[in-house]
Amino acid sequence: MASEHRAAHGTGDAAHAHPTARQYIVIAIVLTIITAVEVGIYYVPYLAPVLMPLLAILAAAKFILVAAYYMHLKFDAPVLTWFFVAGLVIATAIIGGLWALFNGWGG
Image 1 (spheres, one colour):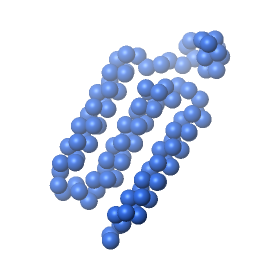
Image 2 (cartoon, helix red, strand yellow; image 1 turned 45 degrees about the vertical axis):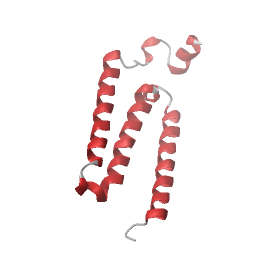
Image 3 (cartoon, rainbow, N blue to C red; image 1 turned 180 degrees about the vertical axis):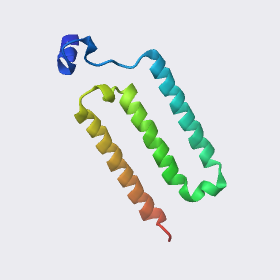
């Protein structure tokens, strides 16, 4: 199994370097900060008109960090990254469409 992994990603262990424990901790801290910003934004009344787009952008940023580092997509074949990007785009379009259908823009 390990030889198949090396063959798929290069000739040796140095073909790609995975994140260190320190990088994982930094990413976890960044995710925690983004989550705290999301919670804080919810309680700011004058941001109500742009609440959904702001939360969607922050959620997308967290999705990208988790998929890239914790799911190792940054280090795998680009086609796997495109699958996740396509899923994010499709989910965003569906949620945006449903939001527009049930809440309407300006009506």
